[in-house]
Amino acid sequence: MKNILITGGAGFVGSSLAIKLKQSYANTKIVALDNLKRRGSELNIQRLRKHGIDFIHGDIRNQEDLMQIDHVDLIIECSAEPSVLAGFDGSPAYVVNTNLVGTLNCLELARRDQSDFIFVSTSRVYPMKVINSLKYNEGETRFVLLDKQDVVGASSQGFNEAFPLHGTRSLYGATKLASEYIIQEYLEMYNLRGVINRCGVITGPLQMGKVDQGVVVLWAARHIYGGNLNYIGFGGAGKQVRDILHIADLYNLIDVQMKMLDDISGEIFNVGGGLGISVSLKELTALCEGFSGRRIEIGSIVDDRAADIRIYITDNTKVTNVTGWAPRYGVHEIVEETVTWLKENEYQLRPILGVDNK
Image 1 (spheres, rainbow, N blue to C red):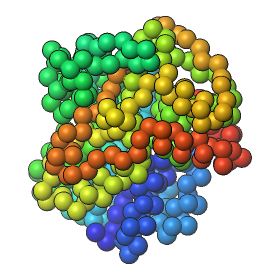
Image 2: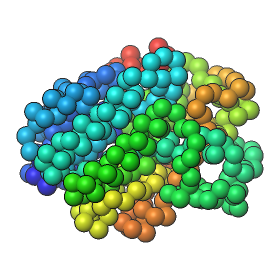
Image 3: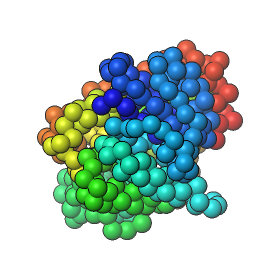
């Protein structure tokens, strides 16, 4: 592939993938397009250019911004309004126009150029009420899914691709799911190659964590730069659990998928750290205390927050069986690396990730 476009290319996921691709494929032209809406994304422009990546300040909501780009062999669609709370306190226009209309505009570019298409979707396409209805035990530091469930696609190993989609999931999740359906139609109708990755929590250094997205970085930043945190909902004890995926592991998967699109085109994969790379907020607090050497106040709010879920763990069985990929970075390694990055770049990051960061 001689020309690759990465949308959301100055964001955490997009910029990280762009740089790793350029390091692996020096002769490939890589273009990163981003509207720079998220604070901190502007810091990545210099990094991108340093690695020989072309940056375009553009917006996928505007089809003309995409159509000005020269021929593209592969589109990696990473752009999104990533907050599951988007639209709850106001207009849903931005999340709908970015996550749905924006994807459609990217698909039109793919149709124009017969481009391959890799879509970074989300685990939040699965309905909240069904997830929270699952059977679990409460351990000392986390909630634990039982192996036998009444819902197909769920077990103690997490959620596989058979998990039901009927129900509500937030506008964020709904727009990503709607995009998935449209992508499948484009692949079939216009004979394109593509794949959909339903990712869990992606994290690692260079992420600009906020309360509603990027919890690992947010938790670590509070321990280093100061400020309070809260365990919100599900009893207020911090026992809710997520699996986490290092950005380098996501790159390794996409690198594999690029090379086998003929065999996997049209597939949907659940992609995450899995049960072995999962952490509760209470466990994350202990890790951040250990690596930062600092203890901070953690408040407790018993009432559940809108759109929140008790447990999400990715069952990677399908993606591992089909591609041979498996994540390598463990929880301790991810948190330690994140804390080190925050300490080493405090001058730049404190104004963005300090106590005033929302």
